[in-house]
Length: 317
Image (cartoon, rainbow, N blue to C red; front, side, top):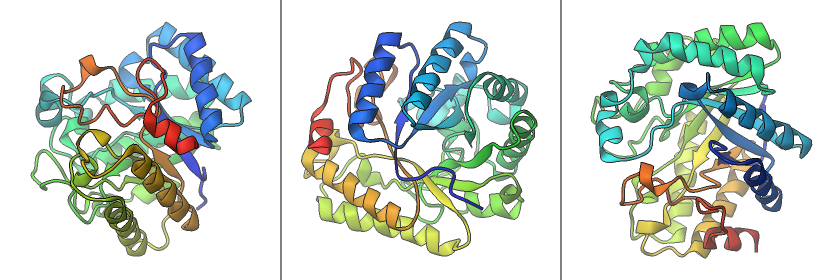
């Protein structure tokens, strides 16, 4: 088993961007010295010709700049009260939407120059699974996606979708059906998911990433410990941190400079463990789709108009 990507990555979504904006985004990726991107691919737009052409253009430009692409097969589920707790009101449960999802996987694999695939995002959360998260259902999705992707490109690498947390300590209260913080990965491995994946992704969030009065030293220690616990639990597995970020809106003892320093320290730590590390995210999502509290759409290095934010300026300084 090998690490399919390495070093510093960042989460990117090119949806609804112009070609000029794509060029600007890639300019900033180069300035950040990003080695890979986690490219969001929305299964609900797999039949949208304009969307696919835009993504193909972005991929060509990324390849030209030697930036590795991890394609994230997912749905666009903005963080707001309804989606966090009752996403099933708007979205079809993943297990009941397999035909559409697998059709999208086939379309993406056929039409996009991507060799590295992450199958779903935070499947241990109701927000993205749209019902009580279920390891058996998820392993079924991975196995079927594996068959499709490998039949098209046998050399492709498949990554276990990034779970929220480290599978050991709850990020927030571990209340089903809303979250499955403990042992989702453990049960998935028991059910044989390792046959289909090259690496396992996780997101070492803590509730303090959203709201806290903690300082930068607390974050450094806490997040490193979270990473270390999972790595020690599965010493033979290869891991990818496919998402991590700190929201500056409600972290009252952190400056943008502090957050930048935390990111750099964690990137160095992950690199020492040979774990690729992806920051969330390059660009803020539009406010209209998210909660007005900005719990999940103020992590970006750039605002939605692609203007530099203070976190970007501190990171590249």
